[in-house]
Length: 322
Image (cartoon, rainbow, N blue to C red):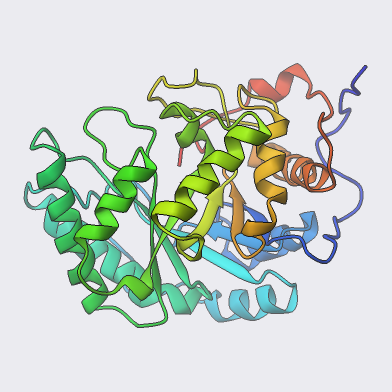
């Protein structure tokens, strides 16, 4: 019988063994960048994803926060070796309507130009929707926008395009479509990478609940794009039905995907250099630490995870879709 966790906060900080990939979470920065880095260290994260600004607004702050230099220094000392910025939810690289198309380009240019100030190499973005104009037109606009964005941003910053669950007119729900986007881009390939979100894969119809299914996704990505392009894996469980085209994140191993496939991805030796980020609910209730420990257990080979208390599934889920 599985044990029910009596408290969400582990008593000791995790230590990841040699060979483990960088693993962390998306954490909020409302109380300051430095506090976020300290929290990441406290729970044993070796990677971190943040928003650099309000993810639901176009307006960007003109300068990084005052504590950004201390954040970068502290993260380096604390062994948080991979930092990613998640761009605004408003960005749509596939749409042609103005002013949103221009705002999307400008928003990503801003994020890539400022990434180094946060110690980040990766800027992750949702690809967006063609808004009824068709896949071919949408992919063409993505290629044009990506090329323009990379032309105006520092060479060390990597633009990361995230797969979609496939709802509406969104693009990038299949690995084949990600490959088509790559083929349409004529320059800047050395600065273009991808993120596979497991909850999005599940919503798009990929069965990543088994070792075989998880391996098949990585096989296909390697075949069509090359694993050197897989910068991030958003390691999320899902509340949605497979193939539902919806995206509802759940605590790791406690959703419909479950621990087997998620653990297989985390332990896949081909992904040792890939950064794993969880975007799971309940950060403000201490479940950031719980989910990181669950990832640690999966890395160690666990096929079952401790049962979570009922209150874990009644948390504010405002941050459970990214």
